[in-house]
Length: 170
Image (tube, rainbow, N blue to C red; front, top):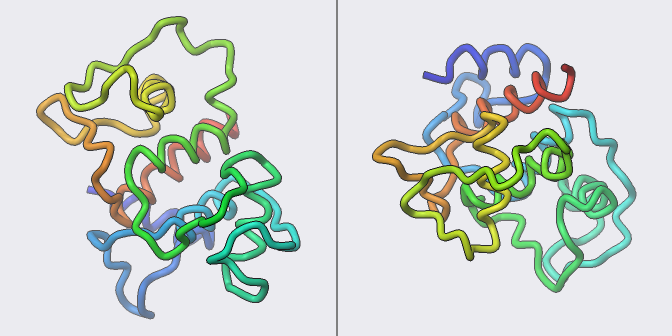
């Protein structure tokens, strides 16, 4: 279902395979990998990592991307970034909305609420999920569910990054 987006992003150098011959679309994506996809897809320039997380060290393949994400406000400075943890769908919604500045756009309908049965309006991620849904970046998983705590797959991430790229260039 995501073959077209994966192929296009591969051609553009945004995504790579897990191996030379396999993309592995159903595998999970880590938090560091998703930030890298955002950076490649919408053009966030890397910065020099100067510290900020106990679990990110200078020289880590993702360290400069983490620095750029902190500078852009995509992630907040804290004790742990958890770069190797699978990214959840709600974390992905927050990162992609901030990266594309969707969360701050004035054309988001005031009071818009995505109608997902598993997203509490009191959740920290509700506004990001609403914005991601409104701009059609991230959709539900069926049965009127968003699955905010589910891990995102490589296929889902590719489609979301492609949608973000299309939205940003318009």
